[in-house]
Image (cartoon, rainbow, N blue to C red; front, side, top):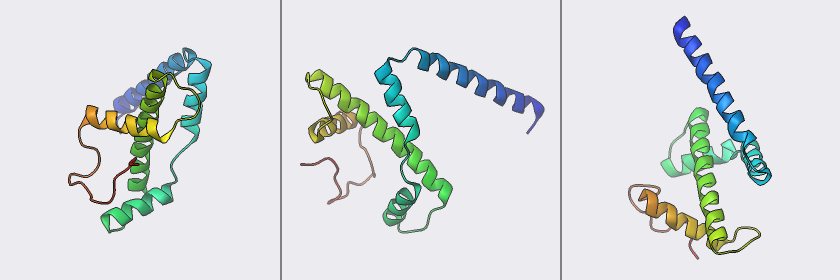
Length: 129
């Protein structure tokens, strides 16, 4: 890597850390707790790898499983945030219910279009009663 590229990357990383610090300083205590919980937890890489291999019918490398686990974590985070918004909109408190998750998933599908594979799988539908 050239020196210019390396220094640009270091500068970008430093700026990213500064931006994250500013963001975290402005979190409410509840937001900070949720963010820390989000940061600490990860989907089990072996379980993700197994699901990928069952779905594709072939072996996948560990880096591929890590990438899919990362995207899955973001997806789960988005669904949880939408479910919290649904819960708040309904004036409810306490833990999320399956109904909140179903509504959040419906809203996510409405915003982003089709979720999942290009062809709908017959028996593999999620968040269905």
